[in-house]
Image 1 (cartoon, helix red, strand yellow):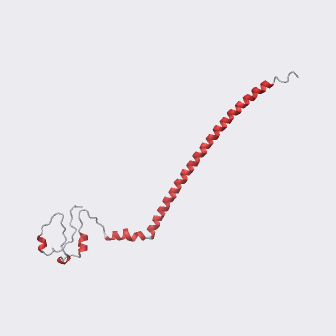
Image 2: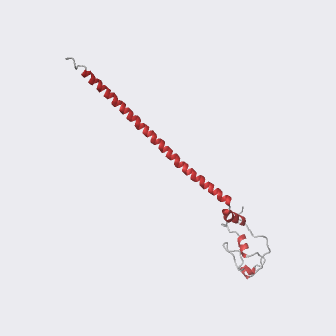
Image 3: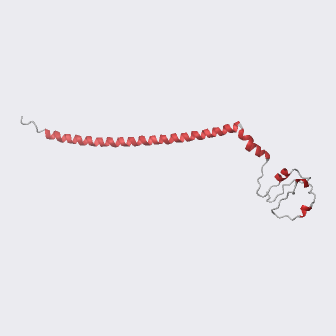
Length: 147
């Protein structure tokens, strides 16, 4: 696409007037000073819309009406948007439920570890108690010989 293209439609040259003798710079406009002096051209608004500057955006009228105004109220589009929004909400809820489930699993594993430590400690104390009871039993064997 060339940088400097002419978008004007082929039309007979405008009548030469005294304003045509004026020098033009690179930044001057190509429009005539008043719409009355250029009867061969279309209306000023359509002529102005056909001229595109270097930084102008080109959009067709059908794109403007369909994309921005016509389709935004379409029930199928709004339904699709609603379905996407619902899916995003369900994903957020699923992520929240997953994190809660992981936290519950972590808590259950921690609880099991605590119970295992307590059981190990209880078993160690029971062993000590049994050993102490055995010592007491040995010392009690000598009782009652005199009787």
